[in-house]
Length: 125
Length: 170
Image 1 (cartoon, chains in turn green, cyan):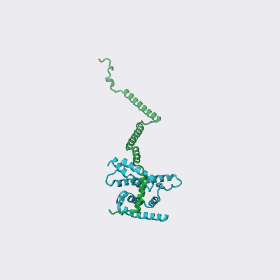
Image 2 (cartoon, chains in turn brown, orange; image 1 turned 30 degrees about the vertical axis):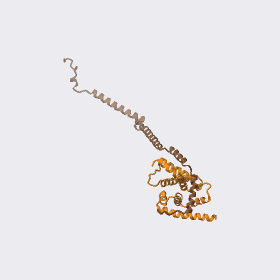
Image 3 (cartoon, helix red, strand yellow; image 1 turned 45 degrees about the horizontal axis):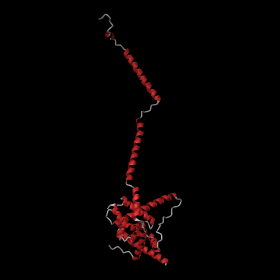
Image 4 (cartoon, one colour; image 1 turned 90 degrees about the horizontal axis):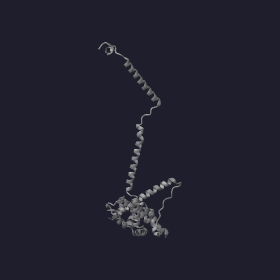
């Protein structure tokens, strides 16, 4: 590879900069320890934990919503007292009519009914 | 390659990696240290994995560079957010160079800041780290031709600025 060679004067200046940086560079072990500490705080288990917490909270929310909405959907329709009274009256009227019809039915006699009556002729054995 | 093995090799590169991290942060030593720390964190968590396709140094320097870019983006977002709550915009963030630098190194630092980020990167990687232009291109994730162009222009500009500086002082 024929990369251009850096000039010596510039190279010398950069070498001095490098020496100054090397002198002031923080310790590798200190930085590694700090990185390890930060890594412990950023443990890969945390996202999984949060996933479980969020899933649990979502499930609880859904269950609560279902429990709250269920009684509303299955509750018997509320009837106004007037309507109830009207319905009761209607039922009563129907019952009365039915009873009247039954009385009429029991009161009716067949014209030949006397023929079948056992005690109509007392002399007959 | 497993984590302990990688770290034993990264230890050998540590001081050069620190220099590169500082360079990626425009000469700011404190930010450079934070960036290198974050890069070590990535390596430990497995967020940055060495797959052996490139040389370890090239791979590691690429990780540091990307980490520095991420940190700079995050810092910019935070500053933008703070600006929303300020009556006046925040002052431009300035680098905190190493104290007690000699005049020559201070001039080099100032001159490097006058270059574009790409030019600064390629010059650091070649002059300071001793990489070839093609290796620098790999770290910077650009083509070799482009890296060579940044190298040539950056070198010419750097020499020009340093010459001006020398003339002013004489």
